[in-house]
Image 1 (cartoon, rainbow, N blue to C red):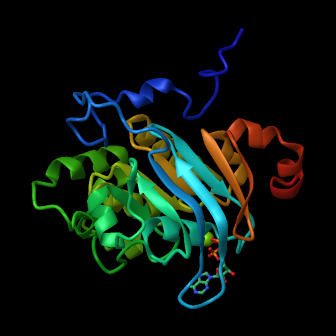
Image 2 (image 1 turned 120 degrees about the horizontal axis):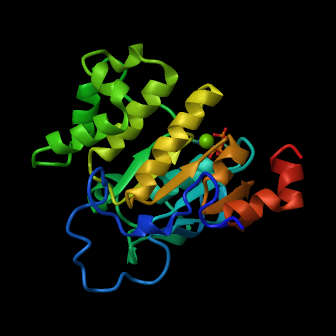
Image 3 (image 1 turned 90 degrees about the horizontal axis):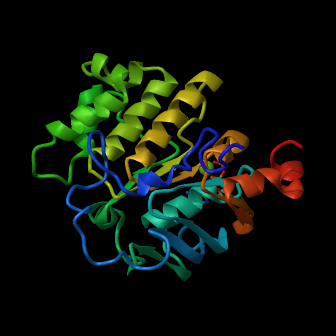
Length: 274
Ligand SMILES: Nc1ncnc2c1ncn2[C@@H]1O[C@H](COP(=O)(O)OP(=O)(O)OP(=O)(O)O)[C@@H](O)[C@H]1O
Ligand SMILES: [Mg+2]
């Protein structure tokens, strides 16, 4: 008999919730915490309604969330509001209704910069690196809120993405698509976030590079850092997702475990090409 929790590729190893040792991106000192964590997801954009400026609402009661130690994936058609939902969670648009909570704390009114200070790392869909700066300068920029020694974190990022160490003096704009995405993810990791938000981390890369990036994202999640990501490669992303959200026209159309969504006839027909 195979063990459904551990037999396939993905982030189903519950030990990830107890991060230890080398390569952990989870802030140190948490393993000794005695206070139990608050109930509910680690990060949630709860029943969000809102749009850009004074424009019409794009999100209509949309909820996206990620639990401690898990990978949550948001999929849906172009223009569904996936990026808008991520931007709303990061504080880049004002919500008319709903709330954003991080580790139980209401952060709905905080600026993006203050959310970074609270532990959010966000890689937007576009313009997520400084192309004229070197790889290493990009990583240094990522650490802008830190006043302590960043060399250890940089070493961890180079451990995760060895090619970046090789290319650290090159302008990031000269790198391949997959390598640029590594720079973008690495840059977000430089703040030592408590949660990582990725908007289409595999956009425009080959299937092989996509697999490689997913493996690195799983590795990050296993180190104890929850990951909330948008993906256009819906099937592959749901395979590694603990939780999946299908958004359509700014609303939650389907929610479930990655496995449930992959097995759902309606989801398969409408969003996964049968
Ligand atoms: N900066 C903006 N100002 C005004 N409207 C915007 C802005 N960005 C996106 N929109 C609109 O919001 C809606 C949702 O767009 P959004 O980018 O969130 O979709 P998406 O699901 O991320 O799509 P994609 O799969 O193409 O990335 C679209 O109608 C889009 O035109
Ligand atoms: Mg988008």
